[in-house]
Length: 398
Image 1 (tube, rainbow, N blue to C red):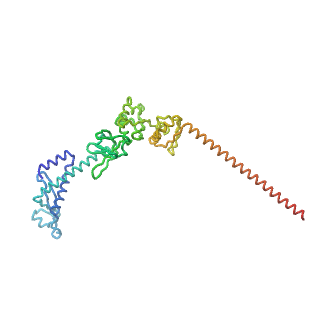
Image 2: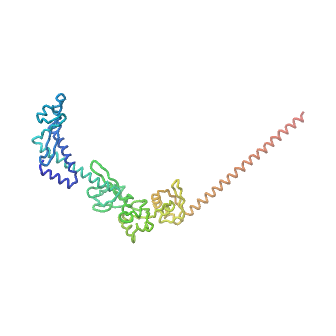
Image 3: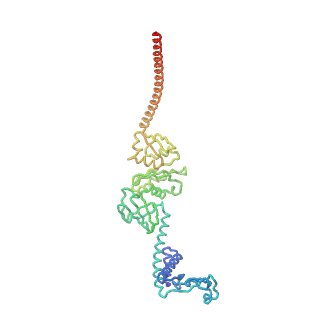
């Protein structure tokens, strides 16, 4: 193993970020395995790797008492050991160089294979560590290739994949297209790290606002929740910890520029920005924007709410195919039932009539009971009269 080889190793350490000591230790272990495989050694051997002498192999034997000598390949009795060096004691290790004459070629080939493998593993580990720190963050990428089910994204040192479920419906992807992606998951596999990216995840909207709005990045404005139907519409609830800062205004930006940049990135997806409120009724009312709300009745135990809206606002509150109501429920995490004013009044009237009917039914039942008692008394009198009549007739006959 010559000096040039060692310099090449040092360059790899610098260029690829591989730890030099770990690399050399790995090479030594691999060369040791190669030695035993090629030369069938039954000895304990040690491989030494250095700049001056390259690869050297040493046999190792333990100094033992003659009576304890069991294996001459692994042990040496103390008398023979002291012939080599009178200072040897029981338990010492004696080493002798046993480097084969033509071992340099085998060692070099083995070292090369180990270096290549180790570099590959080190690069995979570096990439994994780099992207595991970016999980749930956004990165810029370029579409490498796309088919019906999977889009491959160039993320620099590695390609990420975007499955069909993580794509924005109706969004077209073509090679060379640059856009932003949400790092959904980073997994270790036998073939290296696998990076799963998304364009449909609600986290993408949240991270885009963090990048675009300084107040969010600084923590003055907080994003409390996000509900999204990718490619169509998003609702986002925000709160300001500074009374002087309007959270909605901060997100919209001067002349709507901030939110416009995000809408453009998402392909004209509509974004509703709503002010978060600790009061569930107020929050639910705001979540149904742009619809106006007349009244909200909340059930804390069931976490459900009945919302009453003007008749002409019912379709707006529910939204196309129920989208507005569905997103509001996701945003607030409450079950929401929406009714128009006329529906609510009709339900109240029906409930009142039902209650009156129940009361009426109760009165009739009581009357029926009294009538039954009365009829029973009449029957009893009739029975008595019959009995009395029979008695008189019997007297007459006597």
